[in-house]
Every structure is written in C-alpha cells, then in structure tokens.
View 1 (cartoon, one colour):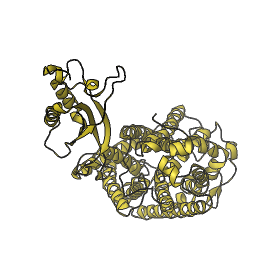
View 2 (cartoon, each protein chain N blue to C red; view 1 turned 180 degrees about the vertical axis):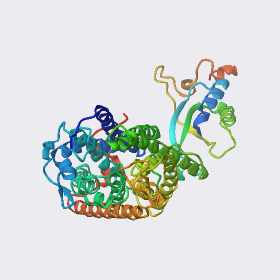
View 3 (cartoon, helix red, strand yellow; view 1 turned 60 degrees about the vertical axis):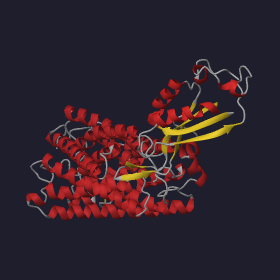
View 4 (spheres, chains in turn orange, purple; view 1 turned 180 degrees about the horizontal axis):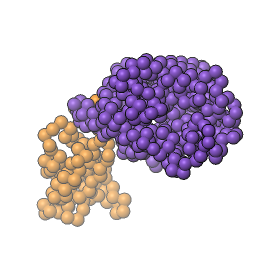
Length: 128
Length: 408
C-alpha cells in the first residue's frame, strides 16, 4: 500500500527536513514553493508608516510517496526536523495513493518508488 | 548692464542639469519598487515618458509660457516659442553668468519631474492614453503658469515676495495637491483596503532613493544658478534635512514595530522635499529642524490618508505636498539674508511679514493645483475615462497596457 505525505513546513526548515529524510533513507521527494496561512492568519510587516497585516506567507510543501510501513518513521523525522515551537510550524497530511509507475522501467506500485540505498534496503527488508 | 559668461558657473549648471534629469528615472525606480510586480513596467513608464513628452513640450512652447515676457503677472508671452532667441547669451534675469539656453535646459528638468511625481497617485489603474492627455494639459495649464507666477520675471507670486528657492510650491506642493485631486476622481485600486498591496521590490525603491538624493544636489544647489556660496549652502541644507528626516522616520517606525527600510528611504525623500523651498535661504542648523519636523508630519499624514480610505497610492500628497508646505512655512521662519543676500529675513530674523507672504504662496498653489487638476481629471473621466477596465486592472498594466512583462 502506497501513501503520500504532504508536509507544509517553514521555508527556513527545508534544509533540516531534507537532511533528516536523507538520514533515514527517504530518497525521492518533491518540494513546492507555496503561499498561504493557517490558524495564525499571517504576520505583521513593517510598512511605510507603521505595520500592516500580511495574510499570505511563503511556505514549502514537501511531497513524498512511500510504502505504508515507512510512514511513521518518516513522519517522526519531519516532526523533529521542522519543529520550532512557534506559530507557523506547519502541518502534515497523509493520503492513500492509487498507483505509482516509473516511466523508464514501467515498474508499478512499491517497486516504482524504491531506490538503491533507501530506507527499505537499510532495514534489510526484502522486496515484495 | 554688461553680461559675461562665467565658465565655472556654466560648468556647474551643466552638471546640475544632468543630475536633475537623473532624478526622473530615479523616481521611476522609487515608485516602481512600491507597486505590485504586474505593474512595474507601467509605473516606470509613467515617470520616464515625461523625459520625452516634456522634452518636446518645453522646447515647443512650455518654456515660453513659463519664462516668456510677462503678461499681467499671469503667464509668459510667446516670444520664446521653439526656444527662439534662447541661446548662448545670458538672459539678464535668468542666470546672469550662464547661457540663457542652459537656464532653459535646467528648468526643463524641473518641468519633467514634476508631473512624474503626480503619477504615484494613480499607478496600477490609470488608462495610458488618458494619462498622456492629462499630463500634457496639466503641464500647459498648471505647471507653466505656476512656474511663471513664482519664478518668471514679473510673475505675481514672485513679485509679492514669495520665497521658493527650488520648487516647494512649483514642484512639490503642486504635485502633492494635484495627486490628491486626481486620486479622489479616479478612485481606489480594486481590492484596496481588503488585501494588502505589498511593495514588490524594495531594493529598487532604495536604489531610487539614492538616485533622488544625489540628483537633489543638482536640484537645490543648482538653483543658485552659479557655483557660489549660496549653492554650497543649499547642498549642505539639502543633505542635512534629508539626514534628519531619515533618522526621525527610522525612530518613528521603530516605535511602531521595526525600523523599516522602506520607511527610512521614505523619510529621506520627505526631508529632501521639505527643504527644497528653503534650501538657499536657511542655515544648515535650521535644515536640521526642517527635516526633523517634516518626518512626523508626513508619517502621520500617511496614517490619516490611510484611515480615510483614500487610495492616493504612493503618498505623493503626504510625502511631497505636506513636507513642502512645511518647508515653505519654515522658509518664512528661518530665512536670513546672511545666507542669501537676495533672499529675505524670516520671522526669527525679525521679519514676521515673510510668513504671511509664504502662506499666500502655499494656499494659492494648493487651491490652484487641486482645483484645476480636479476639474481636468473629472472632465477626462466623464469623456474618455481615466481607468482601465476591471479585467485589465486585474491582469496588470504591464500586460494590458504595454504588452510586456517585467520578469519572465
């Protein structure tokens, strides 16, 4: 069973999160530069005369497609790396994935999202 | 009276002419950084187009309306049409030691930047064709006569004794109050007050600030029309006022949160606008007061304008109109003949009468510029329309008016 993690994180935490994911063996990921706001509703910026409210803040969305049995390890890694404790740390969403197909090899499913030296190979898990 | 060209004076005013020319693209950058990215080319164009438009108008008839032989104190005659007879020989009233043609060129640069200042009022929504027509008529009906009133030989405000060294009335109050009138007629940008309209490139605004400050040395010190002590004094007062206003603005914005870059840059320009009319008549120490007082006046004028829900988008009224109104008053307070023997004494030098004369100059300029601009904008709005369509505004004027994008 494949899952998709969609993590909305701070712009300045991209490096930390990327490193943490690489350390546990999550090889493939995409990031998007996005803008938005959550419960905090934006921040105040200094203007010409006093401050003003900006509601759309730059954020980074990290997308990862992975096997369900690696989900919790990966979430934990992101939670640790993206955490500051202040408002605006972000959110993680998890979705089921219908299918994954690697274009070069036509591999499908779990095969399509496995890489040499990834989290499964490190755990010594046999490919199924 | 024998007249002779002084090469030092001539060289200096040639340089000043170039410095003031540079202020218009400087202003374009200053304004351009403060609009949204979809309107940057449009905003730049609204300023730089005046180098072309007034560059032609001034030679054709603008200079003559402003500085031609006086007609009843109201306007210049047509004797300098096409700069006829404006050549290498000095004019007895306009720079005795420099060629008359150089005076006309130096004044042209003022005529170029003044309408460019107004454009801050209506960026991001003005129809380019209507803007061009408005600008040409404004230069003809407002700038040229006003320039004659204050600086033309026989002009009625100048004859009254109004002191305006480098354009507090002619340039800054004129631009500020015309901007206010135009903003009232054209109305706010779509979405104004609902979502923040963030400046898209503050570094560009900082670059513009630098070009303006340097250019302002030409503007104010050049207005001495000679390389002399008055010019040096004007350069010092100009720098001092800009410095003081930048510093005070920084403190004001710090007290409200953080010392904003955009705020400090704005404060500097406000200090420059404020000292303009006074620069050749007051001491550098008085300029410290001029700048320091100008900053809170303009700072809170922006707040006031914002609270009234008026979209005078880049605060031409608050930054130029209000600052230079104070500068004109300050001239009436601090002017001294010790600085400039052809000037006058102000209140603190024992001549309270000057203050009254200055107030007449201020009020006449405000009423004339606001009134004519309001009427002109209204007529254009009801006939050919001042604004682009709602969809053109949403797409942005770079694409919809000019068919280009700045960043691809």
